[in-house]
Every structure is written in structure tokens, then in C-alpha cells.
Image (cartoon, rainbow, N blue to C red; front, side, top):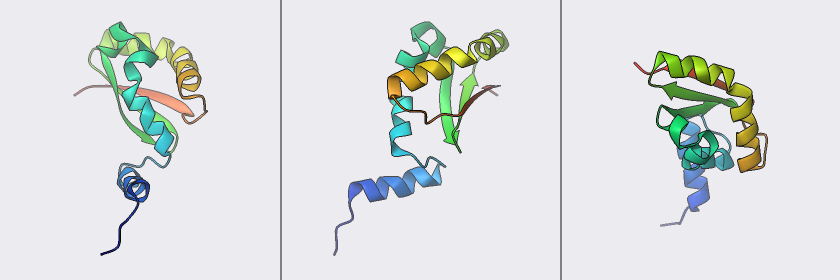
Length: 95
């Protein structure tokens, strides 16, 4: 039985979730740092598809607030991940 490198297996799993950049997965781990504790309590990233980060929000008021903060959040993502892996951020209301 041949061994398959973990990175290769992980890449296949992430591709199933439409995440092509393994480095982008760090975003999920550091979301509290990107958004801040107060904001992160009301929104969570759910997926990255073709460079677009989709963030689920629990309240319509927070959804409106986050839309105004979109550029700030994108800037924080670039600062913390130190790369331009997210082209756009889209917020949607949790159902």
C-alpha cells in the first residue's frame, strides 16, 4: 500500500468544498482575530468560492453594519493572511 502525502489528500478535500488555496483555510481559524470578538459573535465565514468569502450573519442589523465594514474586513484579511486570497466578501442572513 502506497502512502499518499497529507497535503495532497487535504487539497482534494478542500477542492470538494471549493477551496483551491490551502493557505486560505487559515482564515477560518483566525476569524475572531480578523473580525474582532464582538463582531465574530454575530457572523462566521462558511465558505470560499473562487476567491469570494461568504459570511453568515445572525441578525439583519449586523448584516447592514457588516456591509458598511466590508472594505475594512477585506483589509484585515490581507493583513493577517499576508496575501490577497479573498477578492470579495459577501454577507448573507442566517436562515
